[in-house]
Structure formats: C-alpha cells, structure tokens
Image (cartoon, rainbow, N blue to C red):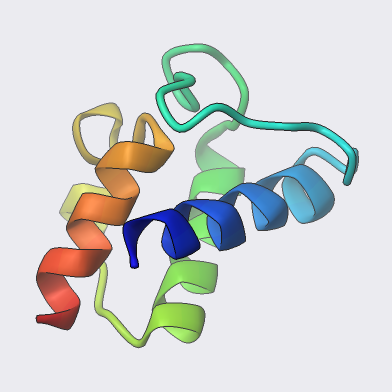
Length: 82
C-alpha cells in the first residue's frame, strides 16, 4: 500500500505541481526543505491527499516535519487509513 501511495503522490507532484510529468521523485527526496514545493503547493498537495486517499490532514501538519518526503506522507496516510 505504501508504494502505491508513493507512486500516486509522486505522479501528482510531478504532473500538477511541477508541470513536468516525466520527473521522477525519489521516496526520500526532500520536498519542502529541498525547495521542490512551496507553501502554496503544499495546500494543493494536502487537498489531493485528502480527496485521493480519504484521509484528513490537519493544517498544523502542513510542514516539513510531516510533509518533507514521500515516505513520511505514505506513513501518515497509512496510519490514518487503518
């Protein structure tokens, strides 16, 4: 399940936020601290996660501690789905 979450989220970030659908994002690549996504993109990403995976993301979780790489996101989503 985690790999499916990582793949879907990576595809969304590449296509919709970065506008480079062919871009491959490593599961441990820093998203926020690496400058790949900004605060505006972070909100879009949170909405995508809520709609796609049916989980609730609290506004206080929109930070580099929770959203800085795909592995962290997959763990968060998996914990909410179980």
